[in-house]
Picture 1 (cartoon, rainbow, N blue to C red):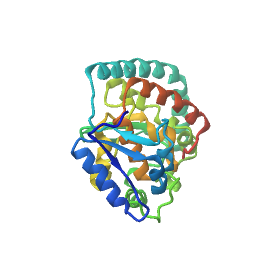
Picture 2 (picture 1 turned 90 degrees about the vertical axis):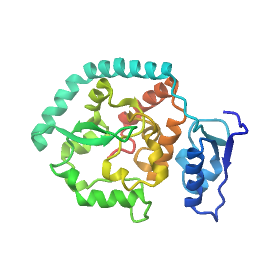
Picture 3 (picture 1 turned 45 degrees about the vertical axis):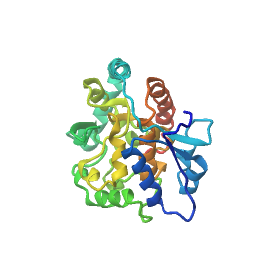
Length: 275
């Protein structure tokens, strides 16, 4: 994307605080300005995965003048509908096998269902194969750890998903490593509450403690996979994962969606970064 008179270039100096950096980011969005950030400065901020996103330019562009043309919306919905139906039929035997293992390991119910927020901050159903013991959604350890993770506290170990390992079932460890617990989300894609590609839907109580700029990740329909799942997964900080979601939302197009879907396959097969 070429620089224009409306493009704001954010520079970062080692002595400056991250808060000043993100104030500039949020200000650019609120004023609907295009934004470019030096990849070198992103590395200095500690966001090396974001800095390594594909592109030949030394600058990483965020086009906050979001355009979501009808042709893209129709094309994306058509792709989601066809691909999710095809995937449901293909993975049905595997889904039945997983259901049997989950039932034998942790019993009924087979699925973990909770409310998440979509791009309009409205509640939608979110469904997964149950990989944890009952009551995990009310786990205080996870809630406190997640709040620390969102706030970037050093006490939280970056590179680990925020879960209480004691509550993960034996079957769940395998399912989570290879993201097989998320197969039921294909039904969410089929009915249109989620997309194959997009930012991850967040929990209501997490959204309430987001900083203002964190909420920018809700600019696109939530998806099963996306930028940070492919280029960072569980080895990135919360801030960096949000920036990756924002980057996707300001660049989304069908070609990018297809590329991310293709890149998701080896990530699932190898279980890279999964837990």
